[in-house]
Structures are given as C-alpha cells and as structure tokens.
Length: 436
Ligand code: GDP
Image 1 (cartoon, rainbow, N blue to C red):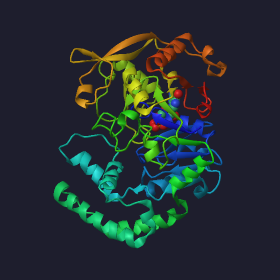
Image 2 (image 1 turned 120 degrees about the vertical axis):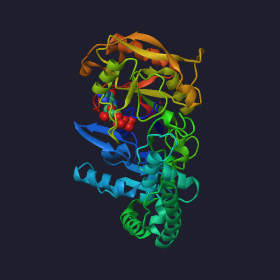
Image 3 (image 1 turned 120 degrees about the horizontal axis):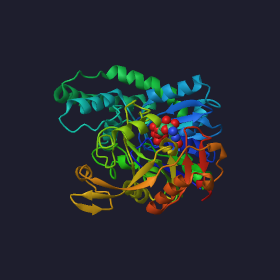
Image 4 (image 1 turned 90 degrees about the horizontal axis):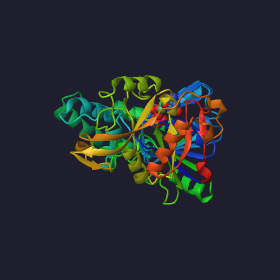
C-alpha cells in the first residue's frame, strides 16, 4: 500500500518520471534524503519540468508533497523552484497547501556551498565530483551536531547564536586551511530571517503528518534521490553521496516505523550510466567508444543538475542484484528501453573477474571494483516498434521480451513497469505497486 522508489544504479535512472506516474495513486509524496543535488525530469503533455527539491508528485492536483527530516534543505533553491512552478502555471492551488517542509530538516547555508567548492577544488584528497551545492558539508554539520534546522529559521535568537558559532568555525577553515575569503555573519543572518518568514506557512512536523496518514491507511509514496550505488554506506565509497539512498533511508529520513513501506521499487535503465568519478565496471567509453557515444546521444545522457556528460556502459546485473538485495526490492521499473532500439545486440554483465578470480558479488572496496573485468552475456537487440500498439508484454518485440526475462531471472524479481520514452504515455505498466 505504501511504496518506496529508489534508483537501483548510480542515479539518473528516470525516477522522476516513475514517481510522477505513481503519484496519481498516492496521497502523500515524500522526499526523504539528499538535497537539490537531485534532478528529476518530468515530461507531461510535452512540457518539461526539472525538480531538484520539491517532490515529483507536485504536478498532480490534490497531493501533499512532503520534504522530510532526512533532506538537507536549501531555502533559496526551494523558493526558486516554487516561483518557477507558479510562473509556469504548474500548481493547482497555493504552494503552501501542497508542500510541507520538516522543521527537523537541516538547512544548507552559503558557507556549506563554499566549503563544498573548497573541498572539491583545493584539497589534495580525491575529488568526488559533487554538484557543489553544499549537500555534503550540510550533512557534516548535522552529524557533528552543529547544524541549523528549518525550525531554527523561525527563532531569531537561537538562530543568531547557532550561526555565530558556525560562522566562526567555518571562517577558521576558510582563512587558515583553504586560504579563501571569510564569510560575514550579518548578511547570512538577515537572509535567514527573511527566508524563515516566507517559509513559515510551509513548516510542519512532517513525521507526525505521515504517522497520521499511515494510521488512516492513506497511500504514501517515498521518493528516493540519487541511486543505490551512491549510498553513503552501501555505495562505491568514497565516490558516493552523503546520505542513505537505499530504501531503509525512507524510514529514518521521514520518521516512520518499520512496516510503513510495503513495496520497494528499483528504477534501472536498460543500460548503465554514471556521472562524476568513481569505479564503473561495465563502462564502455574506451572499449566501445562509438556505442557509448550513440547511447549518450540517443539517451540524452547529460545531467539534469549540472549538464555534465554521463559515462555510459552496458547493464550490470551483478550490481543490479546487489541493489535488489540491499534495498529489499520487490519490483523493477526498466527505463530507456527505447534508447537501445535498433541495436544488433546488447550486452549484460553477469559476473566479474577480480585478479583472475570469478566473483558474483559486488566487492565492498572501490579499489577492487576499479580493477574488475566484466563477463558479458550477449543478447539479440530489438527493432523499432509502435508503442501505441502495445497493450501487454506479448506485444513487445520478442528480443525485448527475452531481455526482460533474462533480467528478471537473474535478479529474482519482476519488472513491473517498462518505460520507452520520457512522456507519461510512453509507459507499459505491468503491475500496480500500490495493489501488490
Ligand atoms: P532521475 O534523476 O532518476 O529522475 O533521472 P533524470 O531525470 O536525471 O534522467 C532521466 C532522463 O531520462 C530524463 O530526461 C527523463 O525525461 C528521461 N527518461 C525517463 N524515462 C525515459 C525513457 O524510458 N526513455 C527515454 N528516452 N528517456 C527517458
């Protein structure tokens, strides 16, 4: 009855489209981790909307979109997004009636963005390839208990005290460690007060809203951001994001108990992409350069948040099986199957070779993952077909049916949705996760 959506790869799997589709069945749509480093693209009636912070259910009338405690929240970006939705007439009523922001969510402040930039540009440590939006530093402050929460923006005295301490510490780093200009307390404080004032009607105890919703058996959709392999604990550390992207994060990130989520649906492309640095076993940028470029071009594989070209590779079933296990996935949504149309063959990775030994599990160390040689199974490609004539799996080209069966058999769960284009209508829904 309640569904968690997670990316089953390194992000950009098409979660936005799937969340938008499933939102029609839910009453509450919840963002529970990450921040505006996400970029979910929705295409409705040919019109494109990119959301970074507001849940992708916002385009449906009558839904409550919740930004929960696990999110790191940039109020400036939030209002830019609200203003742009209002300007494009995408909302169905006043924004504060459709959106609630947790008073426990941590706030991203200007010094977090600066720190992110310094860490990426000025340290001798490995570059992670972050979006430089201050997400990691805001989570750092949360964990070291120096964070400023949304609720603090509404309490000027507490805010001033906390900001004074934070600015003092950050300035020490800027001045003595990074050698960059310091930040001024007064303008940050004034801006926070203004943002807090505007934020007031949106602020709520999101956990309580959800607890009541669940008590009354209202359908809830939890919208994950990034992807499983970017999880801070279970991803390809240190080339990961700073939050728990796996399905378990939905519970801690929104303040609901075990059992709140009954289905976990993983979104995977029919191939794999990765943005930024870090190991990527099935990458074909060097080995099959032309194919990589073809997939990137047809699939428009450029980041929604940063515009960066995504690295491309074949579908990695070892990694996908890991995602099934670590999230407890109950179904898969397979996206971008249209991008591989017209290929003579497609490859899927079914095992890894590590130092001459064949392994079937993802190693925990990034250094090992970077040394891996993938073993591929080659399957026949599928031709163009008219999506409008497809009512069920049996109407799909037989090669695509074979591809889907191969994936299902390997990972042990069903594909419940097939996406063959960015639009809502370019979708074959095989099972409804809300009635599983
Ligand atoms: P997300 O962060 O997981 O929501 O993914 P992004 O929005 O960053 O990237 C997915 C991109 O693929 C967006 O531009 C979508 O509009 C697009 N998309 C989603 N599903 C499909 C599909 O099945 N086929 C094609 N060609 N594009 C798709």
